[in-house]
Length: 256
Image 1 (spheres, rainbow, N blue to C red):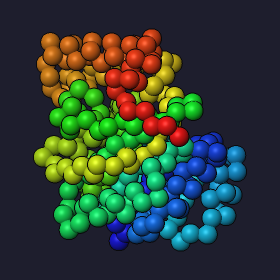
Image 2: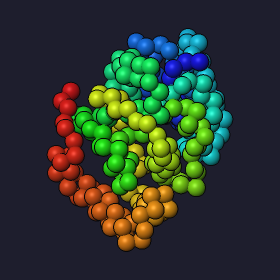
Image 3: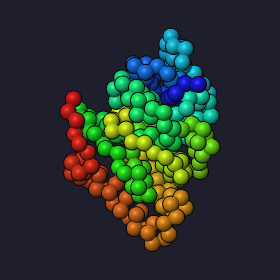
C-alpha cells in the first residue's frame, strides 16, 4: 500500500495535465500512486499518458458525469493511506511537498492533513494561508488541493453529487466531523486562478447551493445562515469589484 494516492481529473486539458505531470513526477518522495481520471478526451491526453514510463500511474479514460463523479472514481480506486486531489493544471508547490508531509505525519494517523496554497495569477503568485479549521463553518478553510484525506474515512464519506458546485466543501465538512487534523506549515499546491468557482457564469446557482450548505450541512438555522450567506456573497462581489484590495487583505504576494 503506498502512503499517498494522487488523483488527477482531466478533460480536454492536455497542457494543464502536462504541468501537473511534471509536478507529480518530480516529487522526491516516491511512495505514491498517481490516478488519472480522464473524461474521454480526444486531444492526445491518452497518448501522452501512455508515453510516460512510470509504474505508479493508473489511467482511466471514459465518459463521466462531471468533475465530482470523476473524483469519486479516483477515490474509489485509491490504495494509498492518504489521498489528495490535484486536478489538471494544479501543481504541488515544490518537489519536496510529499516528503515534508510524510515527515510531518510520522507515526501519527490524522484524518486530515492540510497546508497553505498558492494562487497563480497573471504574472503573480499569491500565498493563501490556510484559515483555522473552525472557519470551515463559513468557507472551505484551505484549497481542496491543499488537503490530504485519510483514504478509508474519505471513501466512507464520498462526494455528494447533489451539490453540483460545492461537493468538495461538503465532502470536507463531513470529513471533519470527529476528525483529527494536522497542519503542515508549508504551501501544498499551486492553484490557477479563474476556474469555474471563481467565475460569474453559474454564480446564481452557486449562491443557492451556498445557502443550502449553511442551512443543511452546518445547521446554522435560517437567521445565521442568512447572515453568513450575505457575508460570503458580499465578499465574492467585493473581490470582483475591488480585486487589488481583496488581494492585499487575504493574500501575501509571492514574487516570481
